[in-house]
Length: 123
Image (cartoon, rainbow, N blue to C red; front, side, top):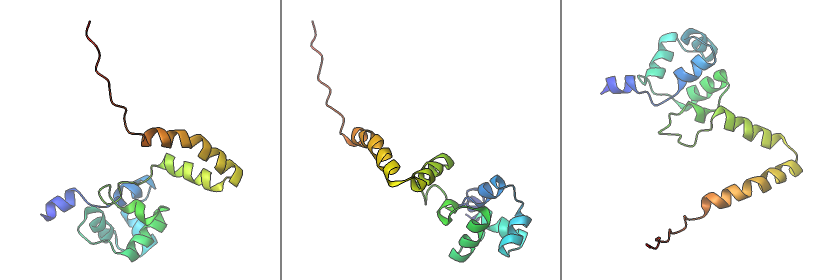
């Protein structure tokens, strides 16, 4: 059973560490863990506590939620989506209102139930 955990860890530490260009040793030095402990966290062989999650997220310049695997965080934002949110938050109230007006038809369209298809008449 632990083999399954090692093959399929429930966190994204390895992925995010590599994306940041850090070795396990580099990350460990930044957060106060040994390289082997970082490896154990990445492989699911060690539980990731809230404290270590905060330290690791800070070192990787991500949020704690970003460390979670897809099963635990299905609404995780992509880098592109995160940039859109940052841009929205940094824009003026007038710009935000404009963005919301543009997005409204999209929200209305996707929230509308599909129309029932009427059967075609045969000739």
